[in-house]
Image (cartoon, rainbow, N blue to C red; front, side, top):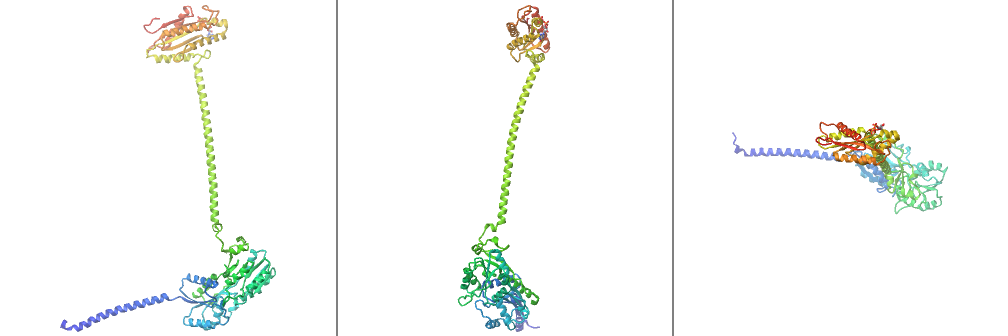
Length: 600
Ligand SMILES: Nc1nc2c(ncn2[C@@H]2O[C@H](COP(=O)(O)OP(=O)(O)OP(=O)(O)O)[C@@H](O)[C@H]2O)c(=O)[nH]1
């Protein structure tokens, strides 16, 4: 058995071995992580493709910048990771013609070991350079070109793996458009130049296929390779109905370099008394009025589309050259104003730059919409007001009509009430004398009797009869008899006050008076007054046996209505007193107090 304490070096060795093994494991894991990270970093940096973009001109030259901008824009949205190298030949400022060897050497030094997968060239100088040095620098690499002026297929008939987009100015279309804008035009002036291959080619094409046709209808003035001063002199001699086309450059030089097209455009438009048309966007904003404009960004975008197709695997030989150059009608408002051209004179869809903000142009439909809405609202409000006014008028008329109607109804009601009252009065009035009739007499007597029945109050009754009235009729006639009765009734009316007293024609020549709550004495006094009143009328009655005048006899009684007594008894008693008056000699009053325990 081993002593644990005597074997220390062995245990130390074992312990060191375990530690070393652990460390080795950690180091291995660490190394693997580093490799993974490195791989990841490498894959993150790896690009899908490397494009060498060779520009004929220089940065800051707006045409080139436009192409580059359009090219980058399309690559950025492609989703591809593309490494882009850009070379500028600067051939406009420093035309080198065929002396491109130094440039080729510089590029050879850069791209021999940093080989691109695709070459893109913009404009003719870069195209010519790449074709010239292709075998040495870019053998077998596909080429996409853009901005190549007046491209013709025979240019690449011996070149493989190449496609691109033609840049061809639309001289005829631009002239046609200018003629529509300036219909009075008689002279067409063109500036052409041969300094650059592209400009020279444009001039040649124009001379071959465009100018001959135009000369049939217009004076065509071609200023070839002229300086600004020469152009000024030439333009001064042209009629005012002239339009100028900047299809080439002036020959003037800047300090140590050629003038840029923008500078050319600025100088020429400054001296031109005529509207100047262009074909490229780099002349815009330099004083030209407008034109069918080829734009750099559109060239760049189209070239990028072609390049992306190649990178996606399409054989460049299967992609035909795009011959139709996209253009856009663009005009400069400031120059239009100078030459009296209105937006309405321009072709439909023309884009105008430098146009001052016009609320109407910017928000025409919104304004029309709002104004229409306001008008509709105003009309609606007007209609509503009109309706409200009509309604108010109708209500007023209705109220007036209602008031008139109510007034008429009230009048009719009043008339009806009056008629009813009159009828009611007539129904209780005796037609001859105007006194109450017999029916009314009976009703009042019954009601007064009933009223006084439990009161203990007296009720007096007077019955009056004309003395010898038959003789009166016989003597004076029945009409006089009626008149006599009316006069007697009038005496009663004057002496007998109304309610609750009532004078009535009891029948024939007999009259009666109801005197509720009247003592016998008062009734007798009244009867006497009536008698004498009638006598005082002095109505002649020569047939009377008691007087020369009409007289009356009156019977008066006073009763106290009781539960047992009836009105008819009172009448009978009064009639008896009248009979007694007749019997006593007529023209007198006979009274009887018919109350119990009262003397007659
Ligand atoms: N003109 C006229 N005569 C009337 C009317 N009513 C009744 N008489 C007449 O009155 C007369 C009453 O006559 P009588 O009853 O005989 O009584 P009298 O001649 O008045 O004699 P005494 O009553 O006894 O005094 C009759 O001749 C009736 O025709 C009337 O309304 N008009």
